[in-house]
Every structure is written in structure tokens, then in C-alpha cells.
Image (cartoon, rainbow, N blue to C red; front, top):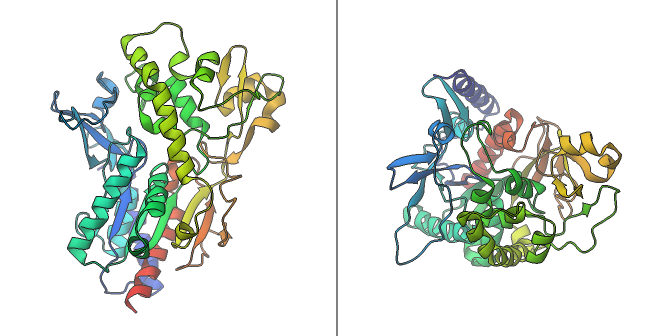
Length: 413
């Protein structure tokens, strides 16, 4: 057993002991949980290769075709996304990176959940348009009604970008469905997008190293999800700190003029050409999606919610375009444009600036790692080191377990 998994099990036992000490270990049915993984959180299975192309060491050491293919009613998909990625195995049985395994350990050990019985990880193709995930959520909610009854309350837990799909679903579903959501736990919700989306388009994504295999920039640029994570009203400045007033992130002409995404280089491969041809449609679809999840919605706000955020890192609140290239990483801006740090960088996790996320938040905001208003809506600003660490940060997992135990008692008392 990898050492990190051993620590995960020990930590889950410690949290379980704290739940018992607080006398929250009621022997009553658990509230069903629907968990929505974020980007990269579901394994990808290539039916032609008959192998997983994302989700373990083969993703790093084997070249795979990650180009996204839009669903077509006449053809079955080449790639399936039907299995949750709990742990990313690097050296089988020895070394792995835990993804949702730590959260799963806490829910099972401290609260008695069992995957497939009352804990449901909603695997989905995270490369796709988030509106497809909304449809999947709707089907899953209807499935739970069939299993547990029409009036059974349930819980949403979502990581990062998947929170946008929940917000979209809540704003478009029926009042009866909204009333069934006992609580929604949002880990790192990107309400205002992230410059990390543009960064991934520039550099691709490599789980190990750029000397190994991963998602190329064209692979990323071909995925609808990345456009739905763009900051809708980005602040972009030049190397002198002046705003680029003509920049419109949803205008294909701006992408070509400023050499963004598929226009980063003038050399066009066949895949790159396909990405360019789909760019305008991806941008317009993203704009419609973003408009649908922006602003205030009173019906959505009526759903009890807990947000898990962090201010223990530095991230971008503005991007720099200078010297005919983009600067989308904090380290680069600090090194190349130290005079622009105050204009461009702020606290948050490494993907999301904290400022703005709580703009319309009306519930308590807490920083104490132990004292939370259990059973109510609140936002917890923790010291998780990165955006990805939010879902595995010990104070967050403890908070989640205590609040779910409290919600369970409220329902059945």
C-alpha cells in the first residue's frame, strides 16, 4: 500500500473518532451523495486500444490520441468516460497520487457511506460541453428518485468546474428538484473563470513532465470545456501596464490578432486546422453558457451551500501580453515584469483569485479550521496550498464530515 494511502486511512479514522466524540455518529440512513469530479477527474477509456488512456502511468509513458470528438447520434464514441479516478497510479501498488480517494476514505470511515449504495461518483467526459454534464446530472437525480423515492433529499459535492454545471442545473430544473438538495458542497468553484484555462491552451497539460506524454495545446484547444472556463471579462495589460481595451475574449479575430490558443503559431497541422475551424462555435457556446451561470439567481441561492476556498497562494487577476507573447503564470510575471505584480497578482489558490468569488455571498465566512456553523450555509477560507489540494485538505475533509453528519441529524431527528 502506498504511504499516502496509509496516511489517508489513518486520518479518516481520526476524523471518525472526532465524529463519535461529538456524538454525531447517529445510526440513521445516510443522505445519498452525488459527487461530480472536476477536470481530469474521470478516467478515459479508448475502445480501439482497449485500454485506459487517462488515469494511470500509461497516460504519462504512452502516446495517446486525446483529440475530442463531439457526440454524434449515428456513431458510437471512441472514448468512454465511465469510471471515477480515485487515485492516479504512477508505479502500480507502490506510488500513486490520490485524487478523490482521501475524500472517499473519510466518507466511508467516518460516516459509513459505501460507493454505489449511497455514494455515487458521477463519472463524465470532462472534455465536453458542461451542458452535457447538466443532462447527466438530471438523469442521475431521476435515477436516485427511482431508488430512494421521490421525496428523498440528497447532497451534491462538486470539484472545481463541475460546480458550474450544478449552478446551471439548479437554475433550469424544477422547484421540486431544487427542494430535494439538502446541501451543495462546492470545492473551488470558478465563478468568474480562470486564466489557467488560457495557460492550458498555451502549454498543454502534462501530468508528469513535458519530456513525457500528455495533452498537447491542440488537444486542450479542441475541448469545449476549456472555453467555458475562460474569464468572461478578463483584465489584460501590456508590458507597460496599459489595458488592452480592444480585447474581447469571445471574438475569434482577437484570438488570431493576439496569437491565442490555436493561433499561437503560424504552422497549422491537420488537428490545429480543425481546432481553428471550431473556434468561433466554441467561443459562442461558451459565452451562452457563461451568461447562463453568471449573476445572481434567488432560487439557486435558496439552496443550502458550503464553499471551500483558499487564500494560501498567489494567482493572476490580470494577464500580460507583451513582447509578442502571453504571460499567464505568476512566476513568469514576477520574473519578467516585477513592476506589474501589484496590477496582475493577488491571493487565492493557484488557479482562482479569492477577490470576486464572494461578491454576492451573504452567509458567514469563516477561517477558523475547527469552529464552523454546522448545518448552515457558510464559506470556509482554508490554507490549502493549491486548487487541487482543496478536495484533500484535512480541515476541509473534517468540515465536510461534520457538516454532513449535522445535516443527516436535521433530516431524521
